Length: 167
Ligand SMILES: [Fe+2]
Ligand SMILES: [Fe+2]
Image (cartoon, rainbow, N blue to C red; front, side, top):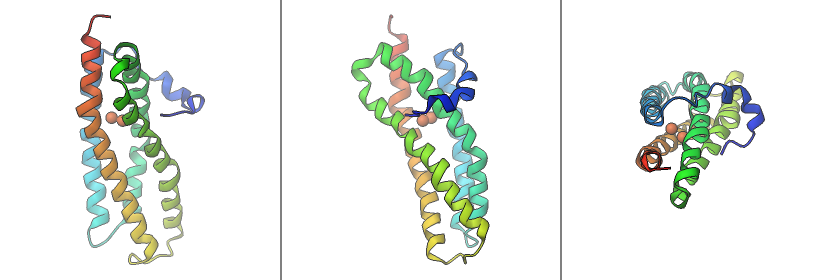
């Protein structure tokens, strides 16, 4: 879970607590689709002959604020519904929400490390580090894809069930 709440104050202020949960879930799903389209772009630039990691990192960096905001919203609103109305069934959803930790960690640390290395521009596209970076980015995408799937199959349906139960 995103623990450093104070640093997320600006983002938290922009959370719309009046948006109905059903509408919010539809919006989150459509954001997953938008992210997926970008992932496919990233995969095509790093896995083709050019292995263009600089371009790939730029695409991911351009999405990072949206990804973080999306995650903060899920924790602020969906987890709240689950803890209030479906606590007995919460454990799997909590685990899925905790996956946000590595997402944020990748964006803050690993991606920055790759960007800095690329800025030095000292590597050929066949170097060991280059291959490691390609692998890290591919893993990030496949893990995040899996995370979206888990949310759509487990977290979102639980929230909707819980929300529709009488209080
Ligand atoms: Fe998420
Ligand atoms: Fe999500």
